[in-house]
Length: 146
Image (cartoon, rainbow, N blue to C red; front, side, top):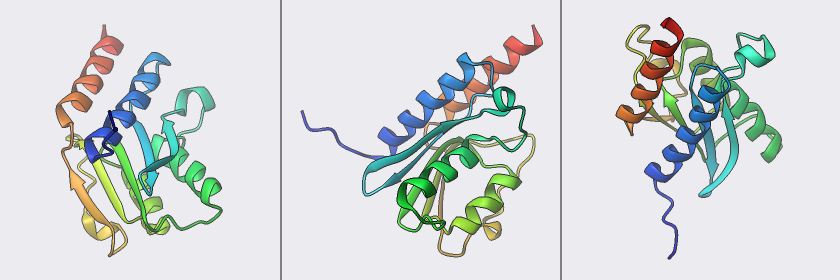
């Protein structure tokens, strides 16, 4: 059977990264960056492991993708991330000039998304597999509180 590389396929890969973060007691956010239907970067939150508040999944993925392609701009790339990017990550993504951002769950507590923060040519798609991404976050924080 030939694998069909759709937005859902790549978001499932981002969810796998979020599950790795969960297992490592990190806030369960995962990200992948895709170029020409190929995953060129995989990442999840590493803020606890690295004791670095900037070690968000998106930031890790940006660095890995830039190293992979040998350029600071991520034109023709798509970011799939399980949670709406925060203000820091959104700002960094604007500088990358990434073509498209697809995210799962909205960050209902912070509501950062303002499409004007991104590069004018960046396309934003929201809500892909939001239930799965949101449930992982809810489970993580419920576990933390108990």
